[in-house]
Image (cartoon, rainbow, N blue to C red; front, side, top):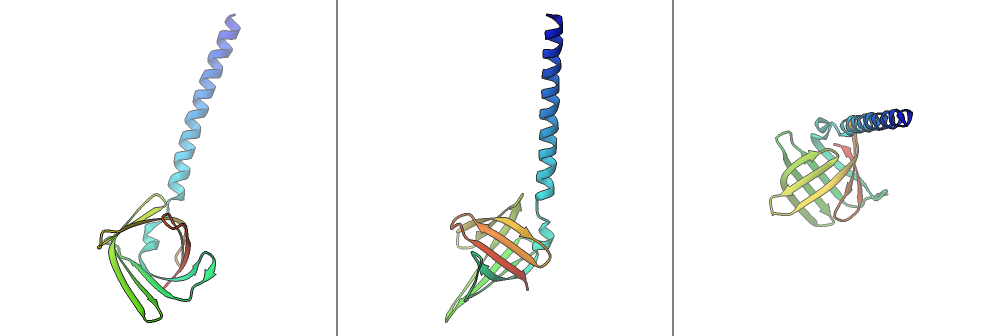
Length: 130
């Protein structure tokens, strides 16, 4: 019976240590996967929507102070929007001046490439640095 208790307690301790190590490694992995938001600063031009070339113009700009602006042109239609942006983990949120809010998951962020998945309309957008 003593041997069973000793093995039982050893197994519990090993499972507890394993769980702690798993949680620590999971936390470290999350931190490593967060994008470097410094790379986000600047102007970006839309290249693709859902992996297809676009036939309209969309330029977005992220400023270091949290300001955001975008210019959309299609045919004779011109729209300008502004607001504020923030990033938490891989989720970027934009609060527009007109009260609208949108969120996107950042899939890829490098010095010259940005790919996001829009949460609301489930579209993927690929941008290149301007």
